Image (cartoon, rainbow, N blue to C red):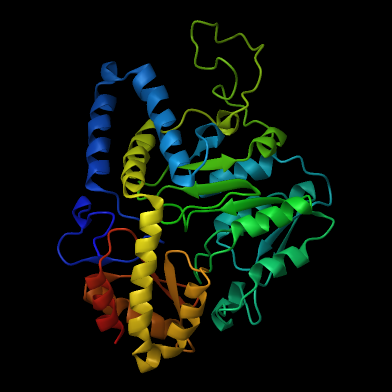
Length: 400
């Protein structure tokens, strides 16, 4: 099985096995070269071009991002991070006192603090457990992992109240790896007059989301999108975007970049496309890096990447079943895998071994050049498009 992303695109320096793009994705060597090339222009600013560079590069990023999502580039806004994208939504939404944001229990902080920051506006934040025994916060390590029959979507929908305005979810959960059914949630939210807002960073770059019924989808670039930190994007549905207050930047108005028109002519309307929500001039350097990485992902193809990752997960779960200590987790994860409830992360629950047990296993992997990660009671193994079947066999030897 040839990987859709040639491993030689990256600089893994020997036998390093990186299965933690869920924490930090490696950038392709071509991305680093593009960044070095643009840095030379920053060193010699007379070489910078307004149309080709300042305007052209961000526009190209939006085109590639839209291709990756199966969306329209006009609906893309460039943001610094996932958090900043969600902050744009949180601060721009027309809240009324007493409104609430609903979210699954145990979301990554990027999808919590933008909503909790609304408390001063009398907007509350409420969490919902997604399965029996689900725990979060200080009790996260004592919780049960998601079972194959977890019906997280129904629990969320049943929890919607007449005060709920936004349901804020992670498409793929950062610790346990559960992937939510976005079109089902989105359609059901629409029927209830609720907006579905998605933190998409743990699935973007490895899976293509179905944005049916979704109001907003935010992601940073530095995980599965394989770009440097500091630039991501926000997708918004057109009608929802019109409800959000503009960020108020000079680039979010008509003719903002037309210097033939006096800059101090403030009789302008707000733009209708994604630029309406952009906070100002983007990091063009960041855009250079994100653009090159998005090109590599689009060249590989979203469907090919997802199919490849599922094949690697299948192989790992089959091997885990052969290990007495791994059989229970293999069976649980196999059930989720068969129901297409997993993103790129296979999250192995600690099963009573606790933090000391998982961290000992983690560091034994480091000594063998295997880099995975631990979060809230799970050992996370995240596959991407460059991994090979031999990498799976190496992981199984380590886990044995």
